[in-house]
Length: 183
Image (cartoon, rainbow, N blue to C red; front, side):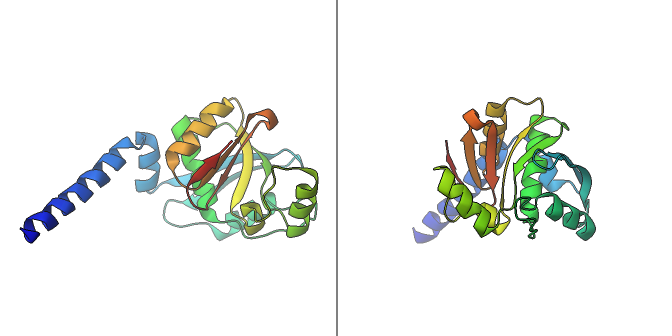
């Protein structure tokens, strides 16, 4: 009897995993399993900079391109750079694949120093004290030509970290922390 229950549990777990994978959008799943270059095109709305980068060559991350992305995502107020979690770039790449767009990502906020984060907190209720921005694990953005609500839906479907929705400020927040969401 105990062997039967163990086999049944295994079957249920495998069935649940298969059902979960089947729910993933095809294009998002393909971006995870297919070794191909990952390219992003971004605009930094505060600095006016534009960046097109192939940060992953199909086999590994390109350290020079990650350094360029780290600089692009810097705290422009304090002119400080931090190593950004490459999983954040992967999330962004997967989002664009799900949304079937190569339009530029409009970066509003990437890395924030503690001083910048505290200053923003003093002037806004929506800034977290222990923000993932200060760890190099978050970004606020929108994608040119894509409805913000669709960006949010795609980010939620990824189930890859935190998703915040700020329609009145015209941005979506994503991070590489635990899966959660808020508006």
